[in-house]
Image (cartoon, rainbow, N blue to C red):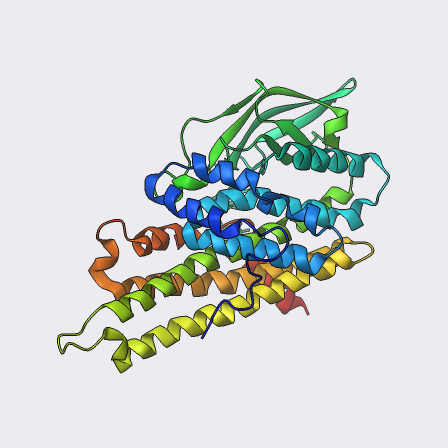
Length: 390
Ligand SMILES: Cc1cc2nc3c(=O)[nH]c(=O)nc-3n(C[C@H](O)[C@H](O)[C@H](O)COP(=O)(O)OP(=O)(O)OC[C@H]3O[C@@H](n4cnc5c(N)ncnc54)[C@H](O)[C@@H]3O)c2cc1C
């Protein structure tokens, strides 16, 4: 029984080097050295799937989900870093029907994509959230000064921090309008914090704080102020939630594979294989059901996002409804992933913590599964409020 048979394989356009890159992710997770992995990733087309599937939404979403699931099998933390780039590429693909073809906002996106494809760049993204004691407080502000824009403050979360070439982020003007910014991470007015935000579990996601020290951005690298960015905000959350669910589900799949291997290799005191025990089979069945139904949910979230990609235009209502649907799926899938991680680890027992066992490492990396953009509580809150109002 092939549980992940619905995912496109390495033979699909853009995924040709997926197996090789995933193997290097495994080695990077073991050695904690990601240099060879990132060199192979950039040389592959995995970060540039949008170029292969610009007019093929089904292919674009399916290959993105498949690539992140596969990298998540090696290391959810590494895949989380990579997902920041890949989700941004999905969001820019989705932005086509939002921004149209020929205005200054779409020109900024067009130029960025051309440069990313041509120079094989990786892009990080960050929120303007300040962290600290007040939820949702803005950490940065943007101001127009003559022909340029100036950003001050900080953002709290930026994964892929020391590997990415560029960062994109949304911030606000003093009168609360959203503005999108593209900046080179080598700009001396940007400072990436030395400290990792997640030292233990998710160190390989390389998540750090970003400081803006009067970052001056020419208007060619700025989108807005543009009211359509409110819709784009939802669109990029859709892309992120889909990617986060895909990569963590990959981690759960790996745990399931390791449980299977354990059952096949380990002997009971009677001398028969552990997998011949009925209780072990039933326990594995519980995890396989959780995984395969989550994969179906994930693929339906992917199709929801495809529908948005195909839409001739996107308004706030449509984007909001799609976001609620994709977020709810991420929520349910994340719960199943956490269940698979906890129960899978217990089936292997102490041995899962001996040596450099992937199950202990991956189980630690997936404790964050329900987090990411649109956190658990906010999803419950949005769904609950809509249900009560309807
Ligand atoms: C490993 C990791 C990497 C990340 N990388 C990036 C990145 O590269 N780029 C990026 O932009 N972001 C990144 N993020 C941030 C992510 O996108 C979210 O913005 C962030 O996780 C939200 O932070 P928080 O969980 O502290 O939620 P907060 O919004 O700060 O909320 C804190 C808690 O309060 C709850 N809560 C919030 N509002 C309410 C409410 N109204 N009522 C009741 N409860 C509420 C939340 O559910 C949560 O449990 C990353 C996050 C993680 C964990």
